[in-house]
Length: 358
Image 1 (spheres, rainbow, N blue to C red):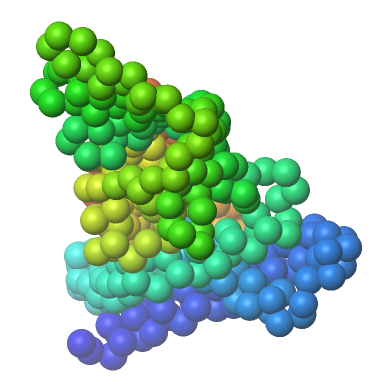
Image 2 (image 1 turned 180 degrees about the vertical axis):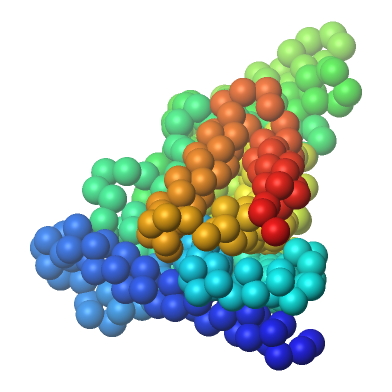
C-alpha cells in the first residue's frame, strides 16, 4: 500500500471507531435513564448493572455495526470530498477502482472481525444481556414460549403440553405418543407433569398408558408415577433468544436437534444462523453505497451527505427487519429473507458506484 492507501484506510477505521465511541455511551445513558427506576426498586447490585452495560455495549454495537460503518464512511468521505482531496486524486489520474481499494481493505478487516465476533464473542454477551433484561427490566414479559408445546423427541416419539411453567417445572395436559412407522404403539397421558430435580425424574399425575395391539388395547392407570423420559426438561421450553446466544458450532448442532424434534421455531433459528454470514457481507455493500453518495461535493457539505446517508441506512435496516419478520410469519424461506436485502442493496451499490461522478 502507498501513502494514500494508508491515509484512507486509517481514516476509514479510525472514524468507524470514533462513531462507536460516540454512540455507545449515548445508548447506555438513554437505556439507563429509561430503566433506572426499576433497577433501584429491585435493588439490583451495582456489579450486575456494570456487567449488564458491558454486555449491552457489545450487543448494541454488533446489532448496529453496519449502520455505524455506513455513517463513518459517509462522514469521512464527505470531508475528503469537501476538501477537494477526491477531486485531486481523480485529477492525478487515479481511477475510481483504485481509490476504492483501501475502502475494500478496511471493509475486509471489519468484516472478518464482525464474522468472528458474531460467531464466538457476541453470543455470550447477548445471553447475559437478555438474561438480565428479562430478570429485572421487562416486567411480565416471558423469555420462553410456554403454551401449546409440541415437540418431536426422536423418530418415534412426540409430546404435547397445554402449558409448562419453568419456575416450578410443572406442565399440564401432558401427552406422549410412540409410533412405529404410521402405527401408534402406545400413548401416555397425564393431567400434569412435574420434573423432580433430586431424582432427575418426571412425576405424572393421573397417569394413563394405552398400549395398542392387533387384538386388544391394554390400558394401565395410576394415580401418580415417577419415570424417566428421553427428553430433558430444558427441551420443553427453550428461551426465545437461545439461537442468538449460542456460538456457531453449538447453533448448528442445536438447529439439527430442533429439526428432529419438529420445533415450531426452526425458521427463527435459521434466521439467526444466516445473519451471522449476511452481516459481514453487508459491510462491503454499505461501504460502496456510502462512498458513492458522499464522494461528490454538494452544497451543504458533510451535513447533507450525512442526512442522506442516515435515510439510506434506515431504509436498509427497515428492509432487514421486515424480511426477518416475513421469514417467521409467512412461507418466505429464511435464507431468502436474510439475503434479499443484501442482494437489493448490492445491486444498488453497483449502480451508484458505476454512476458516481469522477
